[in-house]
Length: 229
Image (cartoon, rainbow, N blue to C red):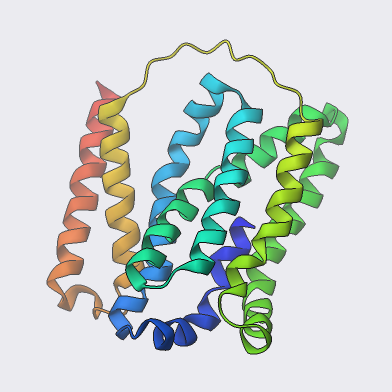
């Protein structure tokens, strides 16, 4: 679902733009908000899973992603859609790493290679079939179904996680590095914004791109200095 939603919306952006009466630079935030939120949240997934358990964080991610998908489908304004896409991106961040962690727990060590082969195939197929599926859904049912398509899959996944995955109590007690997370989040967010909006803004001919590149560099150096200390 995480990989699918990275690309499925691409082909229906013109339809969303017309429905929301949005300009070209405004509609791009439907993609940017999802990618940036996911990139910022991903480093926190390991800490959350270590403190609250893989099962509960994985389940919360799937349920949250499914709810956010439903909200995206009901959005009536661009502001609502972007906010719901941020929520969707936050919840999607843990789907891939926690899915891998779950496979390593379920399968014996000698079967890890087989499990990861199946998992990797599915993870790669999502972004590949996203544009085709998104175009078909948009042409036949409307752009909102590019989000509603996640509801049955997400519901089934949540039920399977709740039923079949055992909860393992975590023994980790490491403290939360708020400063490091803040620096990393700002740096990753600025870098992702720069990469996502660079072509639209003509790269370094734009003041916005220079600001984002500078913030990303400063946050990276500050984070590295904190790690070294």
